[in-house]
Length: 100
Image (cartoon, rainbow, N blue to C red; front, top):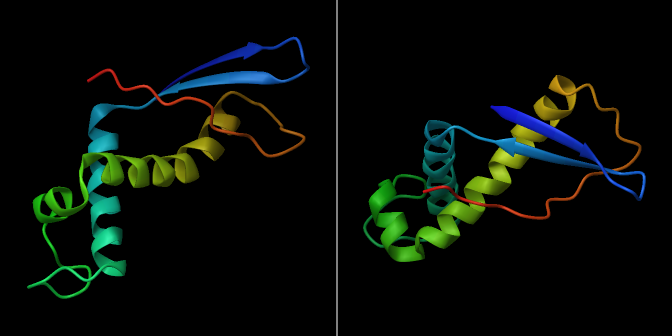
C-alpha cells in the first residue's frame, strides 16, 4: 500500500492511497460473497453462489463498488495510522481510479 498526503489550502489534507491489485481482487471476491448472501440467486443457497455467477448477474461495476466500500473500511484507518494523521472529523472519498 502506497500513501501520499498533500495539504490543501482549506486546512484539510488530500490523501492518495494505492492498493495492490491482489488486495482489490480479494475484496471483489468478498464483495461478491456479501452480494450473494443478501440476494436470492437461483440454484444457490445464500452466500454460496460462485464469484463468476454473481459477477455475471450483477455486473463488474456493482461488485467493484461493494469491494471499494470494503476496502475503505479496512484501509482508511491503516492509512491514517501509517501517515500519522489525526483527523478532526470524518474523511470523504472523492475519487477512485483504476489502473487496469
